[in-house]
Picture (cartoon, rainbow, N blue to C red):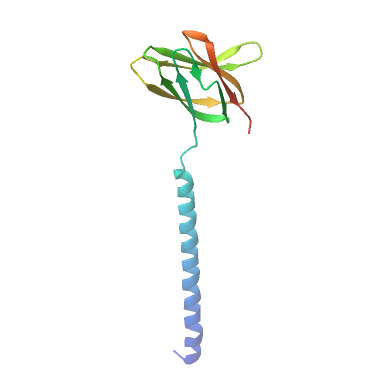
Amino acid sequence: MSKQQKRVFWPSVVLVVLAVAAICFAAARNRSASAAQRSVPEFKQRIRIWIHGDDVRPKVIHAAPGKALVTVENETAADVSIQIERVLLNRTQLIDGVNLPGRSKRLQREVTLVPGEYVFYDASRPTIRGRLIVEPR
């Protein structure tokens, strides 16, 4: 190989190696970014309701639309049956019911909320109510 050929050959080899390394790096970065997007857990807001002997707490809850994890805490020794209803123009629509035996302290349930107003109460005492207001984003 002549000196002229060596002068052209080695820079070409270096350029090819750098180009291959850049392509491999970009492909690995795209794979890791898409894997990171897949592993992000879905956001679920948490709502807690406490049932006392003569009251439900809190009286008003503000939430965002989407999935919510509702936790009912039984502060009584009796069985409770929490009803969650969506308030419509002339009626209410049952969204979910949570039955909690007296020996259980808490129960979680996942619900999907849309904008609007909801009420929650113990079925044995429907006059003692709390409100859940889901505000649009």
